[in-house]
Image (tube, rainbow, N blue to C red; front, side, top):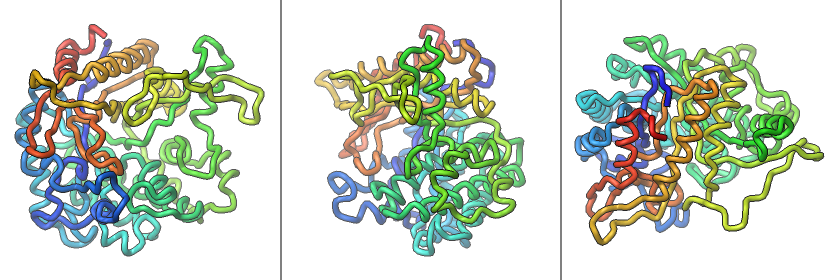
Length: 452
């Protein structure tokens, strides 16, 4: 791949999914701790402890990252580990963990990219209203200031929020994720607006507090539609429209979240569709939300094939082939998404792209020879990264790629029943093993992707 000096090869994980130690060293409870305690919410009744026990084994884990040649690691900070009540008192022991982790990464020449919120919302703040509370953006900004003050002498890459489509849509409207609510559209739109304000205030806070020039983005879901025929102008136009349209009474879309962040306005089709349920939008709210960003981080796993059609929407979804290739999440294997997603997002928003998550869940196990063979994941990565290479060749500025996940972990409502990792984790013993896909990725990084 042709790369400029800023391109980075990395992998990612999130605090609640790998840390464990949910009751140690003063950590407070999160909505996910409470959700896991509710019968039937998480497969097999799994929870955050002990999980991967990264809290105690971080040095071993960072050594494995270094052995893979990772240039960067995208981590998230647990808000309730740093501020057990969500606001007010800071837990020095919790903050010290991230201090040690950042130092360990830098000692191994791995650049830390820090996500400030990856779903583990403090339970005490949830009991006060959570994202529905008008003060929730300020709560998040105050927490951001604590973390940035502590780490920004060494951390320069920041992401505010991970996948608001999930923690609001799945968590507050559908009820499949924590906190497990099934709110009406008006409440969901209010929570979404507060989430966006929290993003904007956090960006302002990072700029004001950081001890070095910061590079800031967010990490929304990439909901990608790609053309059935890439040589058909009509199909390309249909894919572009479908990727950014707001068409349903839910928050599973791109532009309701990223148009305010990057264009300073909510999309017109969404304003029309949601007209009966819109929150009050303050005179300066959109100005607060639309802070200048340095990159567009996006999590892309799959996409939907569409073609132009004489329908009210102007397109139709092409049904997947019988016996299609799919991951263990039942997501289509669609490498085209890693070409068209970056291309269409850059076209609309003008920012360089960072693929903050991409990967696949597979039925990985330790084979009789003691290795964890992962041919499907290797093929998946080869196809998706090949598509990303083509996007860069066609002029899309892509600055980095973070495989999800660096290790097998707690996959939310699926518990430990889905394995995305480059590192295999034996949850009974804690033993780590590099999968064949980790070795493949190591070799790819060494060549800067030249043999894709």
